[in-house]
Image (cartoon, rainbow, N blue to C red; front, side, top):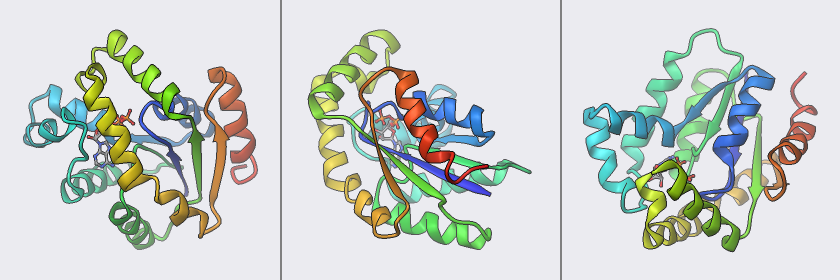
Length: 192
Ligand code: ADP
C-alpha cells in the first residue's frame, strides 16, 4: 500500500493536485476539508460540530478529525493506497496517523510539500472565495487566521517528516501541469 501526504498551507493547491495524483497513481483521495464540507452540507452531527471551527479559520479538534479520518479510511476496501490532502495538520494527528497505519501494516510512503509564499496564498484564497463561495475563503480575517494557524500548528510537520527522510519540497507556483510534472517526478521514484 502506498500512502502519500500532500502537504502545504491553505491555498497552496493541495486539492487540485491531489485529484490529479489520485487518478495517475490510482490512489484513494482523502481530503479532510472536503469531508467536513460534505458533512456541513448534509447537516450531519459531525458537520454541525465542524462548521463552528471552520468558519472561524480554526482547526477542527483532533479527536473529531481523527475519528472521522479513520472511519473514512476503513470505508475503502481493496485500495492501492491513499493520498491524504489537508491531513495531518498537527503533530498529534501525525503521531496518530503513524500508529494507525502501523496497525494496518503500512506507513506513510512520502510527503510532498507544496511551497507557496504568503502573498500568493492570500491572493489565491480571496480569488477562490469569489469563485467557489466557500465561506472560509471570503473573509480576509478568516484567511489571515488560517495562515497563522498553519504557521503555529502545521508548519512544524515539515520537520517531523524531514527527520524521517520522507519529505520532498515542490515549487507550488507555476501552471497546474508544471507543478504536477514536478510532483510526478518525485512520486515516480517510489511508485511503479
Ligand atoms: P485549506 O487547505 O485551503 O485550508 P481545507 O479544505 O483543507 O482547505 O480545510 C478547510 C478547513 O477544514 C480548515 O481551515 C480546518 O478548519 C478544517 N480542517 C481540514 N482538515 C483538517 C485537519 N486535518 N484538522 C483539523 N481541521 C481540519
